[in-house]
Image 1 (cartoon, rainbow, N blue to C red):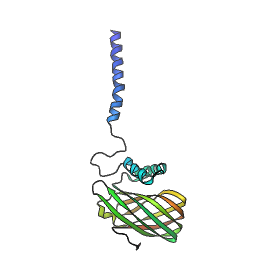
Image 2: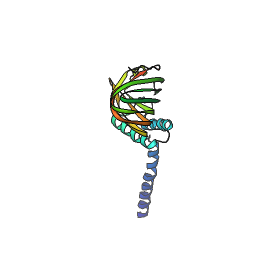
Image 3: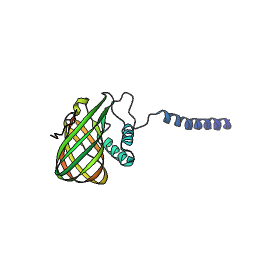
Length: 197
């Protein structure tokens, strides 16, 4: 009788251990969004960023982690390139593509002035995480905020810009020589323009 109880207990323990990996494998990854979700998961953002930025993956992962912990999952993102320069007053111009899950993709251009203790110039590949975007047309606004730059040959940084309840988080990987802090805005338009205002 004791041998039967030991055998049944051993079978129960083995059954529990063998069932645990099956249930873990069938669960969705913690960072992925549920089906039908209109927001992008951390993994989707990181995959898009890795293919866009290339080898600067460690810095990108840390910045995306910080953005997601602060603002949650974005419902859109922009991949593009920009250039800017400043000597007290500055200008920035860029272009890229806005990606959404449920409203399609949209070509966008941005430009904007800044003023502050800022000098130098840079060119950057830019990923902007977009939060609370009600529709793609709502991107055509001015988004203001405070920016700080510290580039010497290369750099990686994040800022936050807002308008109403929409938040943009530009993540830049730039090359150039620029140092300072400024206040300004980015204006998004459907066509390229030289007018930063």
